[in-house]
Image (cartoon, rainbow over all chains, first blue to last red; front, side, top):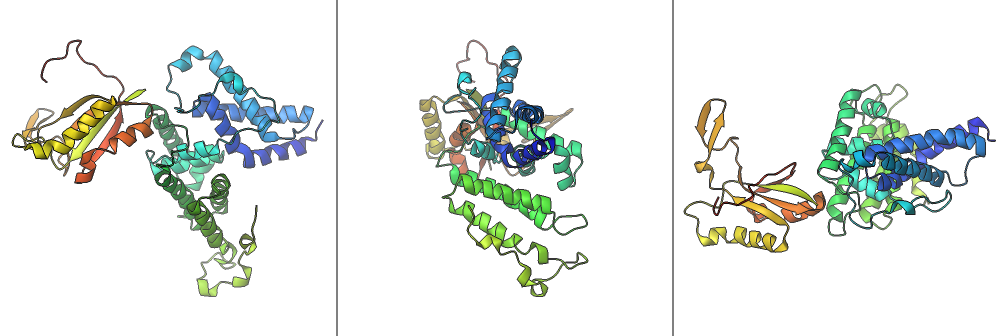
Amino acid sequence: MSDRAAVEAAIADAHCREWARVLAATARVARDLDLAEECVQEAYAAALQSWTRAGIPGNPAAWLTTTARRRAIDAIRRDATLRSKLPLLVESEDEVAMDDVVEEPGEAIPDERLRLIFTCCHPALAQDGQVALTLRLLCGIPTADIARAFLVSEPTMAARITRAKRKISVARIPYRVPRPAELPDRLRAVLAVIHLLFTAGHTAPSGASLVRADVVDRALHLARMLRELMPDDTEVRGLYALLLVTDARRATRTDAGGRLLQLKDQDRSRWDRSWSKPTT
Amino acid sequence: MAQYAILLYADDSAHAPEATPADLEPHNRHADELARSGSMIRAYALTPRDMATSVRGDTITDGPFVDAKEVVAGFYVLEAPDLDAALAIARLNPVLRMGGGVEIRPVHTSWAPEQEPATA
């Protein structure tokens, strides 16, 4: 038995840290982004009961991934005939055999997040769709919250996400990391999405406050994730550094009344210097 | 595999009645390459915009349907496993080096008579 509050905290933590990893690994099996999302949501819901009863697993991400993938396989088997008529996510290399994926919780899961990032930020998708899909699928943010962050109605944002997902399946945008020859172009699109998101939070286009901290934090989270996944790419490292340097001034950019302060009037001693120390 | 229609946009079609073999050479060479690779399953080069006739409602007019700087100069259909593969092939089109562009449209359905006519 685990304390319910501890379980809820563990689930919230896993949602924040592991959503993208779990969804990316599930999408590989589900071959359909909607089904994958549904199964991952169900896995998080199931975790509440199971972890309260049996304790919080040592590797929550592996537990969630295994649960979500099993659900996806069940759904595919149940609806075999229906799903055979739907366009599936295209995977070029090494198709996954279904029996391979029912591994035991605790095993290492291959990190599929890069595939998901490149699919969400494919240049064939409209940029507003790329941004929305990235927040929805990589950060697990509910559509209503994304709509609020970009000051559009929820149905508008839902339509944007649906349109992007439909194009992925109808035009067969592949679920994979681009080949080295395509990488510079494709990476530029990914970096543009992260930078756009950061800018939207750093100087909010409207609303009462200058900075939307939640949006900035999501952009930093994505930049950090990308740096972790592509540690040798200088553009990726450069963007992450740029965002950190820019964000270090966050607390000093407005006065107590929320009014914009010019650079010369900012209290430089309050700039956040923690970023300049090497992290992970 | 999926089918994609590739629409070629240019200031005008290179395939004018008075076009010289030199005018057509880059396009024909590219078409030959695609045909050899087996990815192209159908292709059409269209005559210039002056030859176009448009019908909107009851009205018949001279010229392309959309009055724009570029017109559809031709199109072809290719077979590819996914959009990235189709893009990689479409980007080789010589029209891109001549100030034009291409549009890639996934094909929903297609139809052709059992017996192909000898000439279109």
